[in-house]
Every structure is written in structure tokens, then in C-alpha cells.
Length: 473
Image (tube, rainbow, N blue to C red):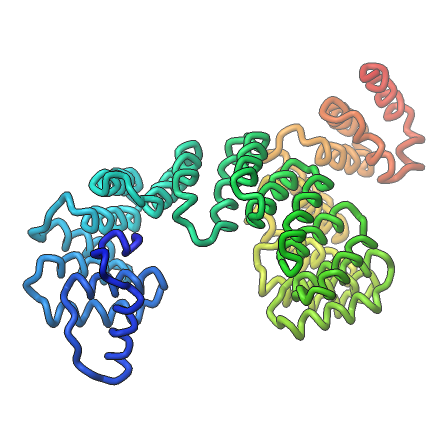
């Protein structure tokens, strides 16, 4: 909940205190700790997320110091750690405590946070920081940033994340949160400048170089991203995440031979990981070497048998080899491990379609729909399943459903027009085609490829497309 050093005397050593407590527990001995010491020990275990020992420290404090006012704060913390925020809040409010004590205010803030009262939590944290004269308050600033994030106030979240940088042990994660704020505010160019500033302060910070690289990823500038990742690797050639991010960028750029080279370099520095092997396997598969890809994915699974990317990779290769039954087996396992990855679900839909198991395909289409109702592809997949089932009415309903969520979506309009023409509803087809041409003229190229011979032989269709070609000159 807070940096316990703020609440210790200068001569108190937290590590020594915790070691003494653990030795007492291990030896089943009785050893005296005052209430303040037990509060510090409790905080240490809360920071370590060691709920069992946090409860033990709290129980001992309550047993041996029942009349000490601080016990009410300790009881509140114990209630919080056991998910009883309302009772914790009542304990604090009903106790005879110093309402200006920083420990009290921080515990109060956590109560409000757990109860979803984020503005009240912010107010309590700010009062605590003021009581500490705003010295060594980086942890508190980070908690305030979390509260603003919960309120979707990214401007203030960003402000306090910056103030809290020095108080974080996990700089990679902290920079990730800052990057997300900039992204939400659509100010990624400013993010680039911010992380350049961080690099100027600490030129040998891997975290800063990686953060800058990932800003370029979000800007779609993958070549620049790779340059920054390479700087991180120059600082630490054993840095696994650096290799993973470079290999990911190379695969995105279809530079698969360079992926293979960077993974081979990682192997030389003993920086191989299961996820990196999956990127390696993907590169081999994209280059047509499915046999090597399968061996690489199997090696990845030996390193981590719960890695969804490895199961999915095998599934993708088997799909490419037109082995839908086996592909489905691996893809379903990947889906179980990563149930929100729609890429896996889309391929499952395709594989079930190959087998003519359209109802199974539609189950996964509906899962995707629940996750992302604004994805045009889910409505296209739904339409295709119903077309394959020879259910044109339901296919049209799928497109109409999509157009309710995505009005004037060209991809959906072109498909709706195509169904009209197939069903020989020419007037409706022309009206819908015109709407599609208005939304995206260039989409007519894909439209004509749905059935080039039939559609290009319809003079009214070609005349309408020609009309819009002239308008789009």
C-alpha cells in the first residue's frame, strides 16, 4: 500500500525486522514486536502479496496489542487484504485515530479505491502526500495515477505517472502505462519526445530504449522501432525481450530471413525463449519450410507447455497443409489458453467451414462478436457461414446486423450488393452498390472478384462503376 520506509525510524531495518519475524514463525518461538513493528511487517507482506503471512502478522498484532490505536489500522489492512473493503472502511471511521496520519490516510484511500470511489481515494492520497511534505511520495503518486486511470482521466494519470517514475521498481511496466496514456490521448509524437528525454537522462536504460521503440511500433514505424530495440540489445545482448520485439517487428514487415538471423543471434547469447521460438517457427512457416516450423514449435512447447502461441503456430501450419481436423485440435487448445485472441478463433471458423461443420464455426463467430462487435470481419465470417449453409436470408441478416453497428461500411455494403445480384434483385443490388461506391470507390475491385464473369457481364453494374470512376478522378 505504501513504501514502508516512510513509516520507519531511521535506525530501523525492514529486512532485519522481517527476518526476525520469519525466524520466530519458523522456530515456533515467542518473540516481542511492538505494534509499529508489526505494522511494518504487515506492509512488507502486503507489498509481496503474501496474504498468508500478512494475516499472521495482523493476528499477532491484534493478540498482543489490542489497546494500541494502530491496531485499528492493522485490522483495516487485514480486512482489505481479505476483500472486505466496506468493513475496513467502517473500522477506520469508527476508530479513535489521528485523521491526519499518513498511514491512516493511505489505508483510507485503499478502502475507497476497492469500493470504486476513486475521487475520494485521490483526495485521501493527496492528503497523505501533504502530511509527508510531498517528500518520497512517488508510490503515492503512482496510486493516484491508477485512480485517475480508473476514472478514464488519462491526462491526470499521465501527470502522476511521470511524478512517480522514481518510485517504481518495474520500469518496463511503468513506461508501458505512460505509453498507454499517450496513446489514449492520441499524442504518440509527444510520447516519442518524452522517452527521448528519458534516454538523455539515462543513456544506458534498456527500459527507455524499449519504450521508445514501442512508441514507434504504435506509430507504425517499425524500421525505427527496430533501431531502438537494437540499442537496448547493444546495452545488454542477453536481453530476451529485445530479441522478441525485434523478431516480432521483422515478422510484421515480412522480413522473415532477418527474423531467423536475429533468433540465431539470441541463441548465441543464450537469450532463447519459448515465445521467441514461436516467432522463429512463424518465419520458417512463412518461408515455406513447414517441417522446420513444426519442429521449432514443438521445441517451444517443451520449454513452456502452456504457451498458446506454440499450439496456434502448429494449428496454422496444419491449416496451411489442409489438415483441418488436426489444425482444430491445436487451435482449440490455443483458444483455451488464450480465450480472447480472435486471430485463433477466425482460423477455427475457417477450419470448421472446410469440414462443413458450420454450426461449430458459428459458435466461434458469436464468441468473436461478443468480444468485438465493431469488427467488420466478424459479420463477413457470419455471412459466409450462412452462405455455405445455403441460408441466404440469414446471410443477409448478418450483413444487416453489421451495418447497424457499422453504418455505411463499404465491405459489408459490397457483399450485400453481391447477394442481391446473385438473387437477381437487380434494382436493390444497384442501390446498395452505389452506397458502397460512395463509401469506398476502390472497394469495387474486390467486389468484382467475387464473381468476375457474372458481375462484369452486367452492363448496369459496369456503367455505375464507370460513373463513380469519373467522379473519383
